[in-house]
Length: 347
Image 1 (cartoon, rainbow, N blue to C red):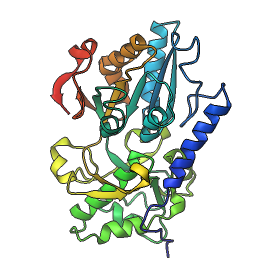
Image 2 (image 1 turned 30 degrees about the vertical axis):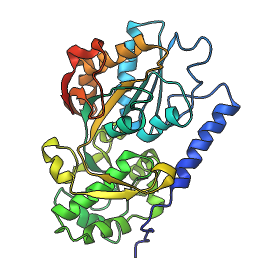
Image 3 (image 1 turned 180 degrees about the vertical axis):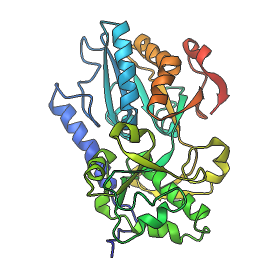
């Protein structure tokens, strides 16, 4: 029998520990590493740093396209050092809200995080720039990968000899989006009685749920884990194959927003650690420049690069779905410097 996991998510302490660790490092050291998952860099407010650096906190799966844009921007501006920190989208926001870190730009995989966590106190606007979809990643050693498809993936996963994992829903949007996909699969494939959802949740042991899927990808590549749920864009970055889920399940299609809204899951991590209900909606990425950005000019240059033809090419090359840039539901009108690149309608 597969091991089961508790129905309630008891990992709020893990997120708190991560935040305390970040705070402790910041308090105890003026010199830190950067350009790694949830890495810690020296605060950009340090003397002499703000004028030369562009500091970007961003979601992990934007690492490759943002790296390409970093190279372009630094070639154009030889005196500029683009300093990026990647990790979970929520942590990108919490570095600013909870830890008081200084950054110029924040980019996330769920626009609502900026709307809810950064607007209006730290910025007044955010712009959407890409979409993604939940897929099932696998490697050559994954069991039954020659049989699996968009119509039977859940049956394959529930076989006794198959293992799968996903990111922690209390930390990473892709984690709670995986659970929402389970809900939608229950509706689309299972008749909506909840049984398929419960089986999929029970079929994944706690040991296969990690704060970051970076910890799971090597297991898939080695064959010690068969499948992992994540964004399609990560397939190219980790040289993994993937199974596409039905559009009614993968949260990819804005035209199916009403269908996605039928699904909801409860996760920890709200105010005071209280459970929070998350409702399904299309996966839409967003980016903003913070009000106290130390290098607003370079930040604006990065956004113009991202939203222009070179940025869209970089996103497309890394399997992100392009979308017309526009403002988020909680956003005010973005700066005039971006007006020619943005649709004024709400995302």
